[in-house]
Amino acid sequence: MLAESEKRPESEQKELAQLMGERAGNLFRTGQLLCSEALLVVINRGLGGGMPDELAIRVASTLPQGIGESGCTCGALTAGALALGLFLGRSRPGESDKRHARSAANLLYSSFKERFGSSCCRVLTGKVKEKSGLHAVQCATLTGETAQLVAQLLLDRRPELIEQVDWEYLKRTDSRVGTKLKQLFGLA
Image 1 (spheres, one colour):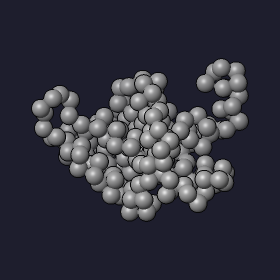
Image 2 (cartoon, helix red, strand yellow):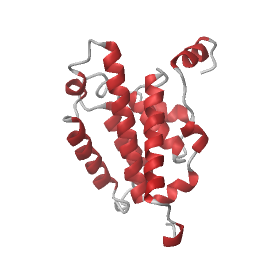
Image 3 (cartoon, one colour):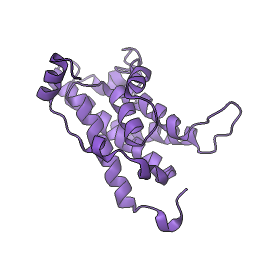
Image 4 (tube, helix red, strand yellow):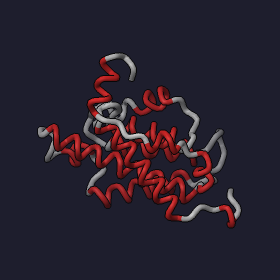
């Protein structure tokens, strides 16, 4: 833990959380990653979680469109819970929940539901599902705002994480055209 004199200002934490939300939304919006993948990759990589991007993508790849496309719990929300576990969770059997991962996940769930009215993907996307442009915008927004909320929860509980932030990665903004060209030429 950082000494009181070494703590970062709350404004810096909020700015970082906002940047993480923007990056996650950008990865979804440009078609590089789906909601859960974008959120877990950004939180993990941005805060130095230690998982290779490929592993974070695989771990989160079953969650988009409501856990296996079932339409149930929002993929960004479930990936947010995974990200909280990565940084706050227990590391061995029988260990106590000393970093309060479960209470952080409960707060994430409650905040998400209060903000968006539901945690169910089917409900969240019901009015825009057939309108692909609106659906993409809505899900990019949900992804970004959920990533921002997760980042803020993590930084509130573990402010020392700010010392290992990958600022270069988080400040990157990709375009949809650039992403398509990279995919076309096998560079993505």
